[in-house]
Image 1 (cartoon, helix red, strand yellow):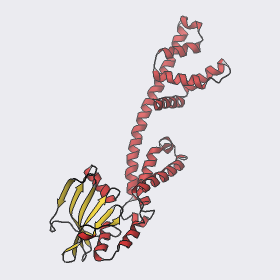
Image 2 (spheres, one colour; image 1 turned 135 degrees about the vertical axis):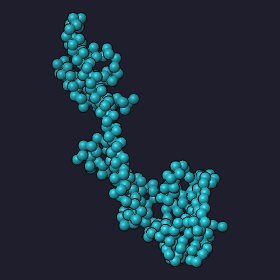
Image 3 (tube, one colour; image 1 turned 120 degrees about the vertical axis):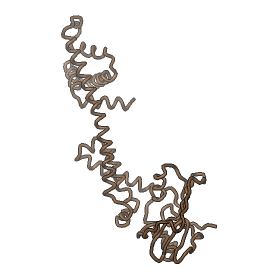
Image 4 (cartoon, helix red, strand yellow; image 1 turned 90 degrees about the horizontal axis):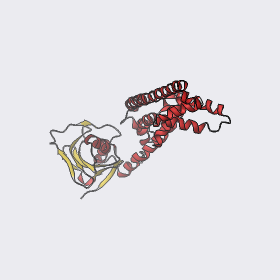
Length: 303
């Protein structure tokens, strides 16, 4: 017979399992499911999907300490994945910290907390799902504001968004109660760790983009030079204008990336009234390295 009572978000204690096993030492079973910090941490540790976990807690009411005597991990279909038990002489006792799961269990065992007290306490916490979306929204707002001042954030806002959202997620979870949140999380440490990870990813992506960018510009410049030399020296091209000859030479190379740049330039310059304006427009766009790079990026996104 079990009587599960909620003590934290997605965390429950079996009231029927509470029993005295020594001098002011109680034991009880605690269940944690998806959404609780304890469950998320253990799932990361074992690197596999879990259904729920059961922990046997020991509470020393005299010394204000707790220990975990046993743990059982279950799959989604209720099968035992792993389990372990310790002798009471082998367990490691830890001082019960305030505003913690162990403190809530201690309060129930000693009669200090009632079920209504715990439900009121848990109502001050936001669910992990809503805290996630709130942190993303706040991160998006902050990233947008910072992007107006910092070029780097404007170029790749994703990295800043992830860093900010990850940093403030615990604060959202505790409904901006910083005093309670800081007992379990260090926002500065989260910001530094995620910031360094995102910085490294940014540099890797930036380097790869710059390498591709330089390669495209170099290839286009080479084709333009080759085309200019060819059209100036080849008598067969004299029947055509230098402009037509140069574009024709480049298109004959059948280089898809370069052809895409030229086709886009021709499309954007179609609104010119005279041939001279049209030709000047084409040359300006092909000489504008930023425009060439943006054109290649848009083409890759379509593909």
